[in-house]
Length: 527
Image 1 (cartoon, rainbow, N blue to C red):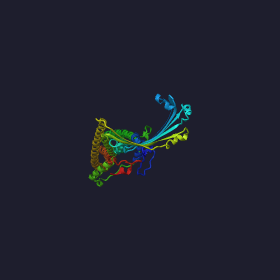
Image 2 (image 1 turned 60 degrees about the vertical axis):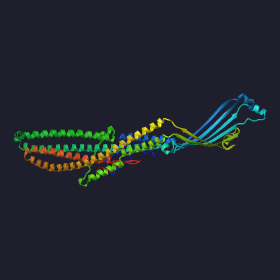
Image 3 (image 1 turned 90 degrees about the horizontal axis):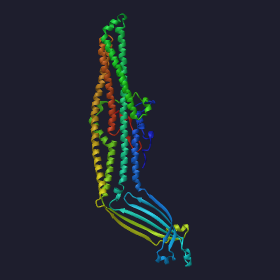
Image 4 (image 1 turned 180 degrees about the vertical axis):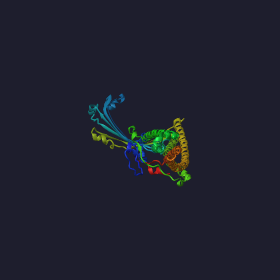
């Protein structure tokens, strides 16, 4: 079996991102975030180990069909007593002493049909030690004997254990479990990449939210400085009088600036938290957490008029049923369950085997090395043929019935889980379509709010520099403008995350095969 899951670190996954962005060392756009996640995330390496374990399980089951070669060599000194009434036939010896040598060699093979075969060759040499003087006295010569036995045996199960449905079931189930583990890996990768994408957009929102608050703080400070020059310091002799006159406005502006500075501090803290969350999601080493920065990449842009929500719902459900890796994994495990159910059902039958034997025996005499091998083909009187029909059956048959009942229960449980997963996926797709409808409406409203608030604030700023009391009105609308800009950011981020969520739910975030896992960044820019 081809091993595609023994690469580590950067060599583990092939990443393809259709982008032309050039990266600085510490500047991350979406493509670089995904790439770094695929390379660094420890959860991927953990799941890879599970895949390798499932592959090892296949090897274990395949091993029962390996060709097994057996061989042995035995030597011994033998002293065999001779019964008294036979001693006259053995030169009046009371025992026979000899050196004995036995060489055995053979090959065994279990086939996936349940049939097993073996072929063996045995050669036995016997060198007599005592009795030679007695033999010479009678004009005889005690010679070394070499006896051979060549045998081929075939065992054919007729009921239990017969056919690949039974004999090959464990291996077939292990292969399906291995394929399921591969899909588990794909699903884990999708989940980790989705988490990193969400963390990236959250960090980007935090960075831009901080920038909006800083710009607002600087803008309000600029208005304050200009207003002070116009209304307070334009006539130094009346400065105290003007301060008293505009005390309410001055206090309100100072309070506003203090709150704005608090907003900047809070936004800074949120940005640091978002940076840590992104670093963790990517699997970045702790010492490099501070190096992570986001690029000036824009959020994806969408046109609501181009989206057919009802058709999207249908398409996404179809895609999910076809591509979701976790659903594929469950289906494969159910196939494995069914394979074993068929095996255990068949194995309820009795063990009824036919064994066939064919072979021959040979003999050669002499103590030379050549006579040892000659025994395999010399003095062969004819073939030895045999057959056997064997039957075995436990009357209660508890073991096989228990195995079958347990496997059926597991199969039912897996089937229920599969149905629940399908329903959950369909429901989540419905939720995503509903969210898309709402997010597009929110996006439209947020853009309108910014579009209307911006010129209003610009106009009020001009008025405030002519009429100090209107400064309070300006600050109120500045707050609203900042809130609208942040809301627009959050909606854009929600839409960007929703694209990734849809790709995840439909099983198209990661495109996997036996060799690699591919992420197309362009697919994250449109529904």
